[in-house]
Length: 283
Image 1 (tube, rainbow, N blue to C red):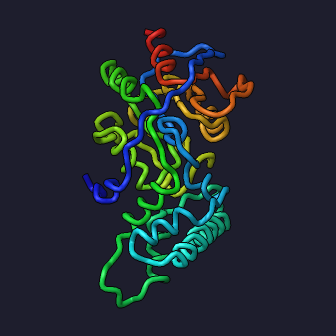
Image 2 (image 1 turned 90 degrees about the vertical axis):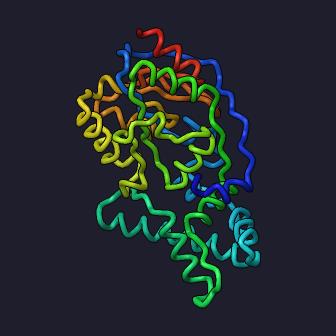
Image 3 (image 1 turned 135 degrees about the vertical axis):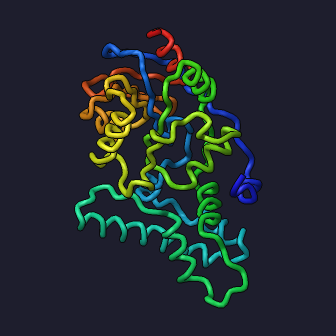
């Protein structure tokens, strides 16, 4: 597996339990495809996706740990932290001026810029920006699969229900998911329905994101009403996908549960066991 050297420094975590919860607010049709968010949906995360990290700008610890791991001093890690978030904000601002409201950066490009600007040009060892970006992410944002993900995926595959991804993500998101699953993500996920923000250049809740998803499912001969979007965020996942005709299932596996019934949500589940039962009940 690529990046196995980086991942060998981390222990694969135990799966996280969800909660027993299932409420249906509007009638659902048996799905022909289900599109899943990743952070705090398929996996329980410490911070969230890159946009969540940008909003919180949590300390320098993960950057310092990364610098030390690669043989550099603490002060360089502190410098990396400042540059990392500054360069992301600069890219977002550049894109806003071009009319892209929620731009997604290429975090490996950000890291390449940081390394080129802070390390000596005549250094004897070349550091791969994707490796260092993965290591920093693993330090900053440990994640674990929610219980029942694999069982649900196997059931969906048996029933010929397509599995897709609709997530704000980076290149390392696929790497980490493969590591957690112990197999390729694409053993389950249809590549035509694997929609990652870093490959688009914009992120949820940008209205273009689920327009792209709508076109992807229609090109496969599916109507959005027969496709479920499962995600943890009422805005990014539910409200953003609803205008395009998708059925919406809010995943509430962690955190507080507020009254979420509304026009944007067809159902709410607290675990993948609940979601599996919901699908089975419609057979």
